[in-house]
Image 1 (cartoon, rainbow, N blue to C red):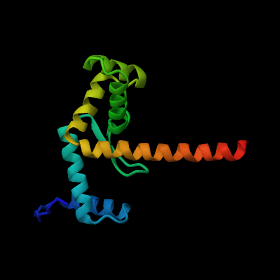
Image 2 (image 1 turned 135 degrees about the vertical axis):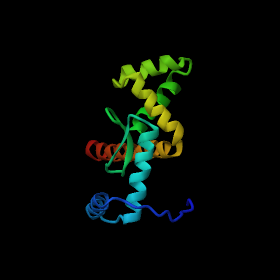
Image 3 (image 1 turned 180 degrees about the vertical axis):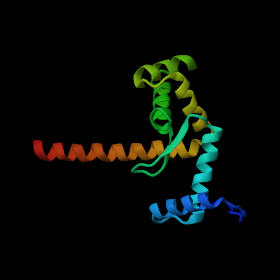
Image 4 (image 1 turned 60 degrees about the vertical axis):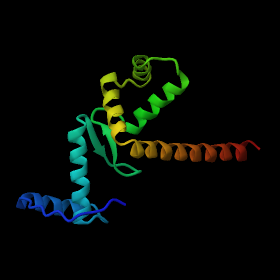
Length: 148
């Protein structure tokens, strides 16, 4: 766990009120954890224009502002690279763009974010694979029961 330091910060009254409302709307979050999350996400979006954060069943995750989650893009790029190892960088991007409809310039935004936070994105890819495998196994058990 990263070492935490106390950092005195003064907020405008309206910001404090909005932050308090945010905490109330997100049970389980403290004022400190909410502030940490919101500042971290703001810094990441500043570092990586085109990236936003969305809530979902697996928690908050980095997404393209006008597209899919970063992990989905990176998984598609990794898959293309494995399937077509001899393609150039531009050819891989063109293949993924063709298959997903996500323009190459947005693919590059996702790649740059992944390069800064590879463990986070790779963890989301792994979690998605586990969920997909579990769903496929459940479906197969249903098929086996009904056909046998």
